[in-house]
Length: 223
Image 1 (cartoon, rainbow, N blue to C red):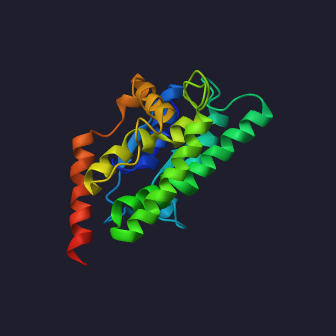
Image 2 (tube, helix red, strand yellow):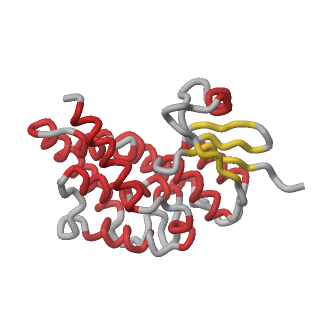
Image 3 (cartoon, helix red, strand yellow):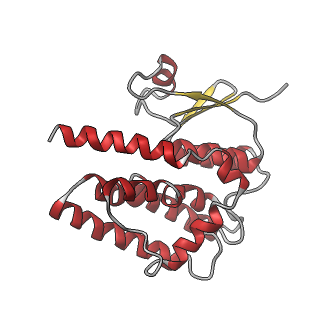
């Protein structure tokens, strides 16, 4: 009997994308259920009653919420093509950077707010964002991926930088990921986007651009 694996997602969410990419790297077949975040389904609210958001992984009818926790579950459940190193210390280091990315980048406190604010507030967030990017730049020295020679959990967690950040920069009319200042990150982005698994479920840039331009206009209209 085939395994029941479902992902409750929103197509433009980098957090949903993390889960789909991990499953594809593992070679796990899954079904996705697209959620309208302005009108969340009864099932989503049932499976994630605390945060009421995507992604949610449903495996044999049992839900797991929160993208990083789902990645851990995927790694432990399907051991082929590991996305965490075997060495305990290296695994701990990978988890540290995943948490860093959630706290500072993917939740985008600095990066996200740099793109949705203006004036002095925006400049302050941009400085914070650049500090985060500098730390990631240093971590990538001498590496093809954060995980070494192949895409690992940290790379999956950082996928928003590879694809979403450029779209947000265009919408906001700012520049954060400069090739001269962050050559390692820019090279990592190129290598990451060469992966077939990465590209198979990556949202089209034009669609993301339209989505975020609409959001930007909505924010501007209420000021």
